[in-house]
Image: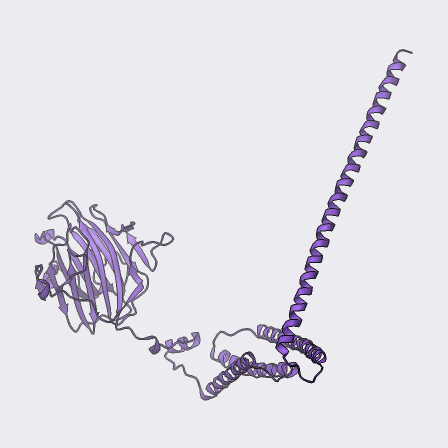
Length: 459
């Protein structure tokens, strides 16, 4: 066990601060940074017990006696070599009774409540403890230490004396969050801490070689307030995970679902020679198709519309036949494939598009031949002197004619609209006149009826 006291700041030319790993890659899915929540949840993490998520930090355990809480990553770590950095604060007014503190975990099990800084006893894995005070041993100063457990040992009554290493660091009530870096590289565990510089200068706390921390364990934090006295607030400000010496993308094979399933079952996922030959044939056909398309786009084509459609159709048929073979091979291996009905429907649509393209090309050929004949007739010789110039003039004339037609249509539309507007005005006038006449006749009839009734009354 190696222990050391707070290192005094040294001159810049003799600074022995611990630098981060050279080749590391940030893993955002395992990290925790503000803003912590998204849709009222912490992505990839979950808090338990009395822990709650604030805007600036996650309070693992508030300053209330006998409370404890934790926050744990939902899935296990997959990195063989890793490095983590976390920032925290322990704030309180108590001295001897101000503990207990908070802990960083890398364990096989996750989120199991217990008496060891808010986590279960007899854990399997690593625990790094920020122990603010120990009333049982009459200790009032904060310490940082690590303990390895194989799942059978109880938490010791005097933890620092039974740890794998530690140091004295006065992180309690620090003006800025204290930062701890835990590195596990080549089976070597290193812990460094900075209480004053926001993680810019971390000094070694302890180091241990030949330690086994396998992949598949979970990252987590927990805290527990003291049972008596004046407890502390235990706040986690950030947690950043880095994969050390990550493998390049070239080293990682993109496996299909059935291949990953075969490897998971211990079987070897490989492509036999027949399938490989089929894949290469399809790739060759696709390459030929791309070259032909490039030819048709970049240069003149001597193929007729029928020849072009036949070539495309033949290539499509060959590709479809090869894809059907691959389809059956993948289906026999258990891979998810498209239903036969959908494939048939897709092929039918492809054939329809090919036929439509052939008809369009034939029509275009007829138009071009007509234009060329017209040009040759106008020029009076077998070959036109400047085909491009004549084509541009013909297209310009055609465009002018279409513009004139648009102008005439616009004029006719405007005149028709005005005529209809006048017609509607005249119809409205006639209708109003008829209504007035009807009203006058009704009034006159009513008046005569009243007069006749009055005359009958005096007879």
